[in-house]
Length: 257
Image (tube, rainbow, N blue to C red):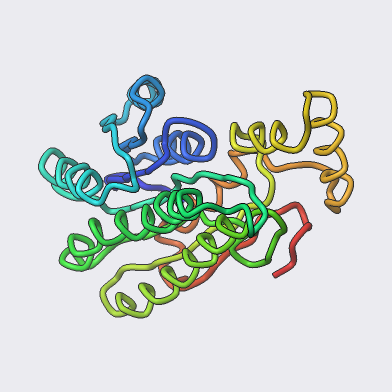
């Protein structure tokens, strides 16, 4: 599973799963655009990629802003001649019971988690179809396959990502382009840390709540970001040319659909 000569573009690439994917792709020979809102984080990841001997661009980008996403992909096209692999990874999580879900919270969950994937796919797909090769990958969540209390906006957005992936896969099936999703369970990232903080009034209660979640997982643990990155690398590779419209669950056995 090598990516020599491939140009990858990763949203939410400054930390967590996105950073792990960026570094995994660089190790496999790809040049990588790292896009996210926090300049300091993407600069650090781009530096790590260059240390591996690969090219990297750090592009500040709010994925919920269609013009910003379009310009970021245009810059990659101008400087590198195209994007071969697009990973829509950026995400956000918020909690609220349905009756407490404000319009602003709902809109933000859709803006980042669903619109962000849509904007990124749309910006990159035409270049891929013109060249006759491409990989569109969305990082959804097990929340895209099941429901969950107090997170209806987040779950709805992640379900939408799977609908996007499956529909796009059919549109580009004869063009040498694939579209797939990865659906991780709990991953040891900053988002999970924020989830822990939202569960209780103090760190001790939050950690106790997370331990209860671990106990319900057959393997008794959360994922490492690199485990998700390994699936992304496979889906980006030539070996996965016949796989499209799929949504792969990685959850240490917690979710079996």
